[in-house]
Image 1 (cartoon, rainbow, N blue to C red):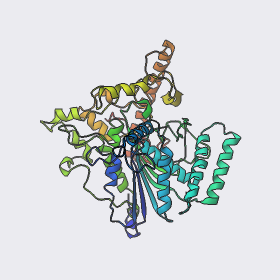
Image 2 (cartoon, one colour):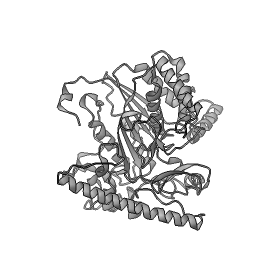
Image 3 (cartoon, rainbow, N blue to C red):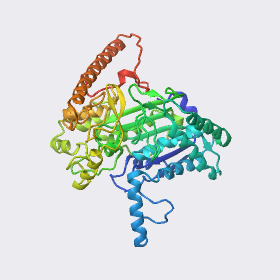
Length: 500
């Protein structure tokens, strides 16, 4: 929280970059993503605050003067094909990263604070850009011809990072990048605040398109403050989360995990229920995505006063939806005594599901997403027996996301369960989930059964330890916290949904 001395310090210049999700752009209604809702709250009259918004991958064609709705027939057809392919595989990813990099080159001066927000693949872009600034630094203003060389140098390093053991070529990439940084770049430039909504792509570190790798390792956090809102109920194979906090994951060589204050919090709903993009249903008073948005805005307010963003606009939730008997607003959203619209609200607040009919998208869209679920061609990381294991077989088949044992679940999830919005089967299971049983040999099913028993025992032991720590804290005893929670909350802050 801000200290009294913060009031006396001059406010710093701030650069704010916002990267929207795949296929997302400004709509001007409640279906806008949380990235746009953050951007519209930035005070454009503040002369010390510079703003940049980038529509999502697949929404425009690079170097084309008009969009797909104008121009001749061939232009419209070509644009449609290019944007469709771009949404599928991210062919314009490099352009999106470097556009943000050039904005920072143009406006950054020493001492400025860099804020970056992103959703979905835009969150991946934001995270990659932050990593690029941290690893290779920032080229001087006017040196745009060197941007592509900086990208090539950094992307070569990214492809090699995570290889165990490191080869001579891998080490040479690191030496060359450090020399490039020292020769051309301002080295002490890093992101101050990185705010992500359901970052998806690789797990634990970045991957370069067409050179995809997933490693059971974590990279140096690329920002001083990192806040990541993650979806509990997203099931699609191509939307596995890219986590910073992974149970028992080993850091890459030379990684410093203590340099950043990281909070990763899990929220109810699917991918767009966290990052925004769904419209309001009939009788729906708020969007599920409002909860992680409100959380992100509250996290911004905890920063030192002279380093905070200049935000305007009213709060996400109206005053009448903030009951005074609760500490936080979301508990009041699901109170059972709010009749007569309680039953309709329970129905409309259900998380969307792109793999289920009648849960947000049409019949053909569901079938199209299931193509990825049944093909055993895509590698994913599964949390099995406390370790992240790369898997291609069996296929994903709509398996829920694996949630680390020490994950922090947002209290709104428990409030929704108590109100009947979420069923017991929709509640998060910490420590991983069983994979699909279809097409598996009996030996594999038996092994997964043993893993499930071991996971449940670890979860029970964790809860007992948490309860003991809470008792010790009340008794004033000094405790040693060994939890892998780098957000200064520790083990006692990592909650499951089953509150006593």
